[in-house]
Length: 294
Ligand SMILES: Nc1ncnc2c1ncn2[C@@H]1O[C@H](COP(=O)(O)OP(=O)(O)OP(=O)(O)O)[C@@H](O)[C@H]1O
Ligand SMILES: [Mg+2]
Image 1 (cartoon, helix red, strand yellow):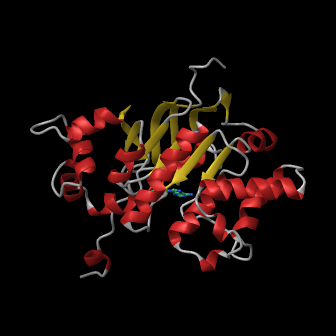
Image 2 (tube, rainbow, N blue to C red):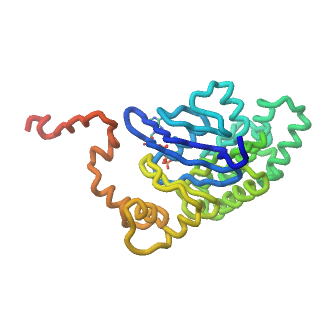
Image 3 (spheres, rainbow, N blue to C red):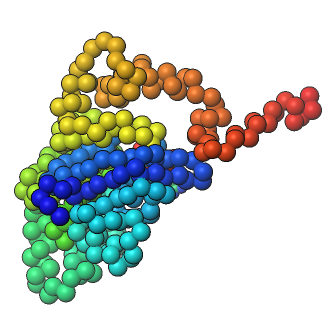
């Protein structure tokens, strides 16, 4: 793999659940050391994209590569080898409640390495120091706040010195100041450890603070993959725009009016409930009135 080849590469990725297309023709690359933000409305396919990159389940078609190696169709052994090279911060932090913070952070080290306990202890201290939790090492998850749980989850994601960090909604449910602290931590870690970061979020302040590059998803389609500056410029552009760009601008600004809200108003109720059916003709919606024989 040459130095400028992407660390993560998705090509024409497609995924359906229960006959409904959730991701269609998703293509983007992430370069080494970059922080890329995946954004888009609820249900547009952000978490699904993330979960396929980490090999939780395969796409229906298309290619996903990490360090030039195909994730799609890789066996468990290969996936486990790849998984050791990345860390994941789940939405909830996903800590084990019966273990202290230090024990939670030690877990990947005791599971995946044969380091002796004193080395593990030192490594845990380093990771907790990185996220500002060293004094709280012996507390249990129930004894710390939501923001601290996120930090602890992050320390655990860092345990094996990953080359890629994946974050799913890192600031969801946090107050604005704690959320800004987590953003700062993401930036610091990216700078200090030179990790490549993939961050899923729909919080625009956060996205513009941390991103080098951004991917805008809409209903499973990639509308744009551009540098942060491109999105900043679009956000601040006034006047008429082509529909896709107007849609992105509405999302970035959180405007109450625009293509997103217009679409919601014109989407049929049944379509809204069932989503876009894939190929199969939509069954006629039974009429409540006639079924009662009125
Ligand atoms: N395992 C699954 N089985 C069936 N449908 C699924 C599954 N996982 C996700 N979906 C559907 O795929 C679509 C995309 O879901 P996804 O979780 O990727 O959205 P998201 O962009 O992360 O949304 P949010 O911002 O609400 O977290 C949704 O319509 C969801 O209901
Ligand atoms: Mg999600």
